[in-house]
Length: 244
Image (cartoon, rainbow, N blue to C red):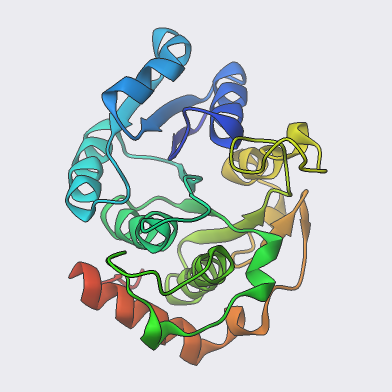
């Protein structure tokens, strides 16, 4: 059985993934933005799930969250599920926090939540304000960055299985009630990638949608874009991504 950390797991796709993993007998550690939000997964915690708390928009809280996670680990997989669609925390939550947690809470398998909207993103890394003090990026930009990072990690850490997943436009709080994709499919690829030994899932660097690989934005596999992104995030966080 696997031990899996899932960020942003108090509702939506993250909670669905945690529920399925726990029902299948895996050990799950859920994450909430605050102690108040943790109450939303009390049923999972009551059934044995571990928990960590921290606001991913605040780098200091991310560093504290990493310490909590290390105490609850080690993990066989981490699903970087948390994300927001707009606001000043867009880059801190969608990109900086997954980068910092990847450095500080390593796992043999890591899965990052992307979106088909990443194809409309701009790979304008020098213009990004990672602190969130200014709005310099769109949701599409943030998803292009994190999809690029997933591919970069696969290249830089051959011992880590790294994937990005487009869960589809599903009717969660973020997706809204008009979303047209099947909510039940939104979490299945992440759960599968975190636990299966299927050869295709163990081949690192995929961009997935409903358990099938797709071609991402050309910048995702551009090594110069990958390195520029990692250098910018390392400078902002003072955390160097190790090579494994």
